[in-house]
Structure formats: C-alpha cells, structure tokens
Length: 292
Image 1 (cartoon, one colour):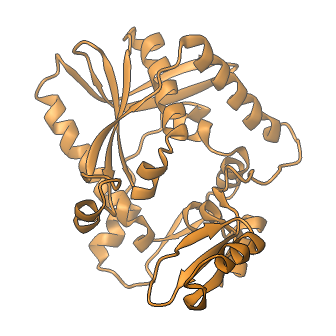
Image 2 (spheres, one colour):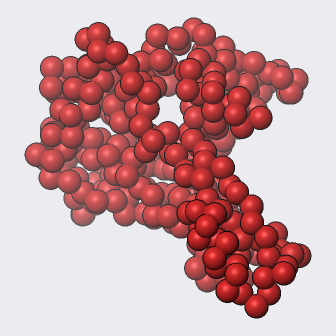
C-alpha cells in the first residue's frame, strides 16, 4: 500500500501512517479477511502494491490504535483476569485462520470484548451482522486453542459522530457516545459451518472461478428513494420508494403548495467511501465517476 499526503500534513503524521505494527500471524486468512467479500480480498492481495490511500483517510485509525494501546496497558495491570490482544491460530477447513480478540475477561461469565468506532446510523439501524461473525470466529479460536469457554460476546462501541444536542432533543437518538453492545453467541457447530462456507467462497476465486463483483449487500447498497421536502426545512418530511407514491401523498396534504420532490440516488456506500481497492475495482471506479 502506498501512502499519499495530498494535504501536506506534518511529517510525523505521515511517519505514523507508514508505521505498521500489525502482526497477522502465519495464517491463510485472518478473521477480518475471512468475513470480507471474496472479490474485495482478492483485489487487495493481487494489487497490494498498487493501492493508494491518503493519510487523511486514516485519521480514525489513529484514535483506534490509541484506544487499543490504553486498554491494553490497563488490562496488563490485572493479568489474572484479563487477556489482551492475544492472537490464536488454528487449522480449519484445510486452511489456517488466525484471530485476535481485543480483550478476554476471564471473570465469570467469560466475555470476549472488541473495541469499535462507528457512526450513529449503525446504532440506530442495529447493524451488527459482521461484528457478530467476527466475534464468533474469535471465540471459536479461543475455545479450541486456549480452552477458554467464552460465554458472552460484547463490543465496546464509541459513536464518533455522536452529538449531545441531538441526544438532548431526541430520546430515540443514542443517549451516550459509548455503550456495551451485546452480540449473539453461536454454538460451535454453527461457527464451524460458517468458517467452512467462507473458506469455500474465498477458495473459489483462487481456484480460477471468474470473480463476481461484490453483492449489493456487501457493497452496502442503498436503493434510490424519493424525498418529500418542505419549504424552509432541511430534512425530508417523508421518504418513498417511488416518485408515484410520493406524488400521491403530496396531493393529499393541505400544505402541498410548499412541498416538493427530490430524488435521492442509489448509492453503493462501501464502494464510494470505505473500500481500499475502489480505484482498482472496475465497479468501484464506475461508482466514483457517477457520483461526481
């Protein structure tokens, strides 16, 4: 990966971005890689020297690393209770996989924690599918390699765009910028079957199968929608899946003269903002071009 510095940030920031202390272990797949879309991972591996990321795009990685470092120091003060940043590697489904939970609390009930930073929308939508997959694979490794019977999975989540004013005005809005987010704990068989399915998907590309672009779900695709806007108001009054539905609704309103329609285009959010190979992937390049 090539790090650029288009904003001419100080050298210390660029030096940090080029410093990589991450140790993935001697494995075919890490937990994070295993749950990635196969097409994305294939492009990352084949074009690892061609990927360009600007240092400014890595800003939140800095706070994430700082958070892990601080919690690791605290955990090391009580080694009989906490296991911090321990990587486990295991042969499964004909490959080796490795994973590292951020913290294991050995006090009953034994809990595997992971630290996450995300946006408020994830909390509002309750979107934890990939977190659940990642946590269960890491718990599977801890059980089978270290004989730790994980009984709970919890992510410690920091909402990086949380606004105190929104929390004060809207009680449906997250009321705190940090929370403990419980995740579903799978049994051993379900986790093993999931690992086997993911390995098979990734291997299918390596075995010469023509790569298919990521699915709409993997691209975090949002369908186009129609927003009813009101004069003097910035946010939509109501959202509709079709322009016809929206037009009919407006026709029934007493204040229709100050209402208007605005189309919100479909968006592949991951391709547009959160994929390192978006400038290499043909679909990613198309998404970026269409958004300009």
